[in-house]
Image (cartoon, rainbow, N blue to C red; front, side):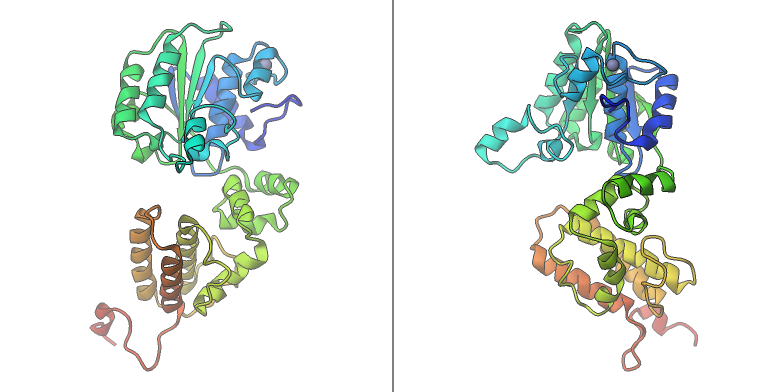
Length: 349
Ligand SMILES: [Zn+2]
């Protein structure tokens, strides 16, 4: 969003914001792009722009009464739907649906529940309090279950008068096709590398380029790695640690993060084995010598685990097993053992 200083929180959204505001013609938009580039921020900034009472140059002003209400998360014409589990990390945790669950100490939900979608539908049908329409922002839209999505679908088919919906997500393929087809797509790409590095450096990230690469160019994801305690030195050492089967420094990571790191390592080890440059790890941090067949097998196993990364595995056991798989896949061929796949056994010498 645009703050009182007139600056966007994520500077690389300037161009996409102008573009999206200039070309949007539907009452329902779907903002999507890779995780961590700011699709939720773009969605809320578009809402701020539509509700702004002094917008200039297709940007919200940041200082009018309406902008201040949006910044305070209390604009009567803006409803932001998030899973309870993400409200706090996205800075919308103070009020709303989460309170009940916090009181009951239930684990916060990772879904956008049907009750919340029903609430959004009736919100959209009421009259705008400040006269500039109503906006519902929903993120991540793929966290709607089937019932929630079908409830929303009816409203997207017959939109109430002056309401707009902005859905944002990182996985449009996980949405019902009928939802996708009713939304105008706004595609957000990776930010320019220099801009992302400067932004991360401003946030105190040393060697920002290393963590930006670790995050695949997604700046907010680079911050998430930093918040996990990862710095450039640890990331650079990680391939050698896994190759030695030493997981002490990483075994406590949340499983989705650990699987993500292993997938990146597997990808880069394959690049190095084929003589190409790594993408996520610094050049020189990955030893040559891994066999592509062993890496392909590791990759398949990681994909299988990634599909169930939120399954309540016994984290310690799973982490150890992941690291040992990595150790075996990264090791070169052992002179005393046959190659790891049956296919190789039958290959011509
Ligand atoms: Zn304003």
